[in-house]
Amino acid sequence: MPEVLKAPLVVEFPFTRSLGPVQSAFLTGLRERVVLGVRASDGRVLVPPVEYDPVTAEEIRDLVEVTPAGTVTTWAWNHEPRRGQPLTTPFAWALIRLDGADTALLHALDAPGPDAVHTGMRVRVRWAEERTGAITDIACFEPYDGEPPRLTGATGEFEAPVTGIVAAARLDYTYSPGRAQTAYIDALGGRRTVGERCPSCRKVYVPPRGACPTCGVATDEQVEVGPRGTVTTFCIVNIKAKNLDIEVPYVYAHIALDGAGLALHGRIGGIPYDEVRMGLRVEPVWTDGARYPDHYRPTGEPDADYDTYKELL
Image (cartoon, rainbow, N blue to C red):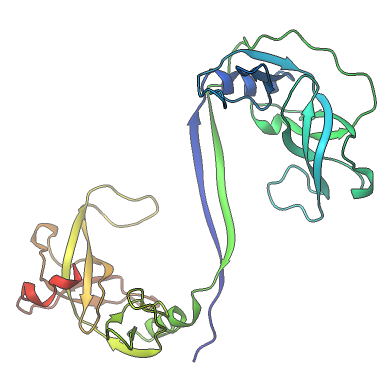
């Protein structure tokens, strides 16, 4: 039994969104070192502002300036800052109710240690040196025992307002495929495809999952399938994917390998895209050093009868 695999995995993409009048005013205000909230139907001033009243669900646009100083309502100490967090040294995550607001804003509080932080302490905004109209224009909060800062008289009307933002969404984690898929990946290294048979329904799952999703019982009987198989369904891809060196159009298909009880995905090559069809018999094509088939090509056999693969559609 090979050692169970694990590897770091990163899922990352840019998220682009447009801003309505309330969020546009809030972020543009941060660029101008102004903090704006919005007044709800019950008179409360909400910071950060929202576009719809949390009580009535009606649209609200009554912008209200609050001061960049406030009071810590609750907090938690962050001993080990992670990539992309506001500070690179240990800090506190704090909920801070700014003067003039009735709700709290979550942000980083720069303090020398957890003993220096307490509920009720006074803090103020530390502005970023370069501001672009984003929540990061507030670099962090810092302890403050002076007089409340004066309001600027801002109404929410600014020159060159921010109308959209791009936020980088990223998730870093360590992925382990588990015992069953580790064996599957290890077999692919030898150009073999291995599934696991359910002891109850006898269906062979490829790739194996370690348990039968239908019967709910563990699977451990390994079964080699293929290498040939049958196209059950397919689609023609006409849009070229970024960073994928395959010319369009091409065919991506569900392929039921011989002996498998579940179809897997694969690209079809070696045949014009408009000649691919359900029932087409195919075999894998490997490239040197590859850990999985590059694509599947026709075997030249007669097409499979529909009744032999209809349960695998």
